[in-house]
Amino acid sequence: MTTKPDLLALASQLETAGDGSRELDIKIALVAEPYPRRVGLWLSLEAGLPAHCAFTRSIDAALTLAPKATPWQVTTLGGPEARVGGSKGRARTAALALAAAALRARATAAGGPASPHA
Image (cartoon, rainbow, N blue to C red):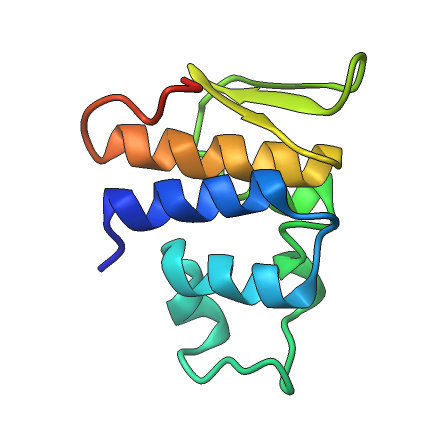
């Protein structure tokens, strides 16, 4: 089971990443329910992920991480920033920012404030 600290640590890692990557996408898939069941627990860097799991490289894929029926917004003026519900993410790319905000929103749903960025 994914813990709130796991989600917050991964969100912070996304915000400091230079670019999205398959390695980061796999980390997300392993902590973000229901993805481990959907793509299988035997993920590896060699096996890769289906295109719909390119969370750090696609805004559409990153949006699938957001809790259902949660309002979201992405802006790029002044650098990519995203908001999912009351949670924020700032990163080098819009997809990374949205994925970070979505993971923080999931952490908030798990109870308590998501982070100092929230």
